[in-house]
Length: 153
Length: 108
View 1 (tube, each protein chain N blue to C red):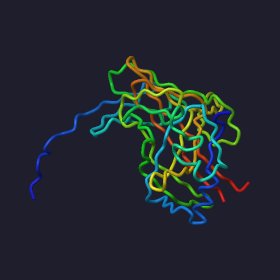
View 2: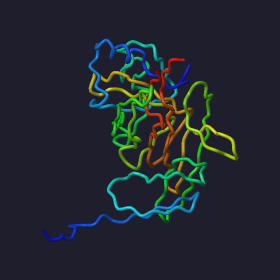
View 3: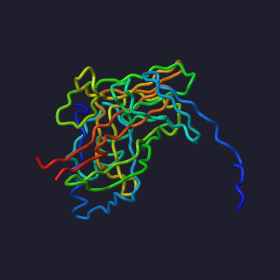
View 4: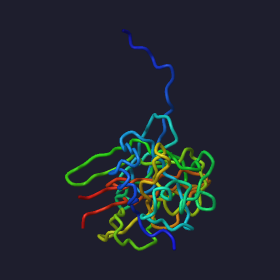
């Protein structure tokens, strides 16, 4: 198995509704960690296994990083917003660039977006649609016009 | 209060696009690229390159099935093409901008 789609973790929604985890999507620090295609992301995992460096998201052998260019454990999301428009809830952020301009990253298939403030728990994962790489340059995640994740009601 | 001259001025950076005729001049800190909606690159939000840099900027099509994914599309000869990333190839390296699909939940 491998990456196949972009999903919101089911347990993220449950934990937010049940106040099991004190998420604050307006104020917490979120990060995007890059992964290769050795993992099989699953939106139905437990809270513990949605977290960075747990379950499928174990860093060793799976995460793609390059020193301070793209940090292990991910780059922070900036310009985060959490809002409704009509019946669509959108969690969005400014595009996320590498920390420097000399990143070398190979076989990047997707990213885990997690809450760095709340025990590194996973929020969603975004599949880039294939293998991406960068050599001595800048790697940027351009978030979709409809955000990092969206819930349509 | 008198107008004071700036203590220092940020250097000008001159940007060009290899795929269209747009140019720009900026004075800003940071290493980021300047983006524009490029009519020469399928209308995508594409990076510009510093003037004098030999580079090509290309869109890469998504390699996998789309399924229910909400991906980014570009118009190629009247046909919507799913785009995975925009790659800038320079003599000394390569930049990559991935167009991340949105993770979504719907009531349908």
